Image (cartoon, rainbow, N blue to C red; front, side):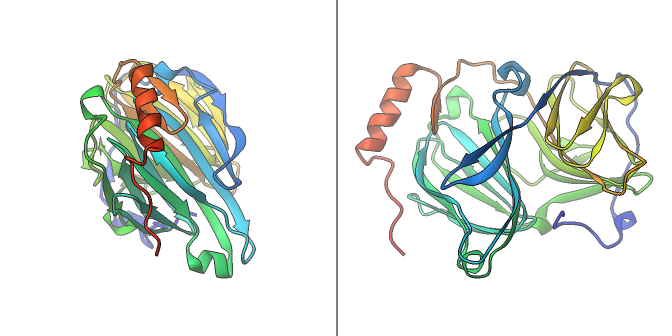
Length: 313
């Protein structure tokens, strides 16, 4: 891990350490272990561990695996509906196939991101590829649910297939920290993902002892989730962060992450932030709307077949 790692990190554009008011750590939560879909293991740092106001516009995040499947044992999420938000699936290792009732989808592999705007509603599935079923192997990734503002909750569904070579990569000046920018603006760089509300999604690898200081928009929320390894967020006055923990940061201009120097394993973190939507949220399973009446309408539309079905192969 991870799949997208340059052979020569120092060949990447270098971003100087940001200066300004450091964002303090207001709260640290620990991911809840659970199972999703047909029974694959996930760690869920939110919701449930942080207040919704701290994660807005993000609704949920699952770290899928890492899990090694034996041949014939890989699991996925069979046909299910969505309306009113977006799912962002960033795969670090393995393979997964998305199919939907709108004609979108495809295979994503290590380093790829599939960004699905459910919008007005569709039915989709996320399943192991034939190769994963036949050979087994390592599966590891994350899925993030991004809320849509009221004005966009019924937009036409769409997919963005972002292959690993499309991600925007940069490093710190020392060359011992790499950032893979999936969406948004960070360090003067721009990620490839199209968003409906201003957000940042990035995956950073910090070698032992590495220091990362990034400008962070003051109007954005800020979250740091440790995929693996251990370190500190918020500088000397900050908090320790270990695998499976998420830090919610307070007001400021600079996001600081430091990897522990006395370990052999790098610190892998997901950096999330966005401008809060601050609209009512009413959710029921795979539907996220603004009112209870809209949830009932979504359920009725799904049961009536208005969100379609995935065609047979």
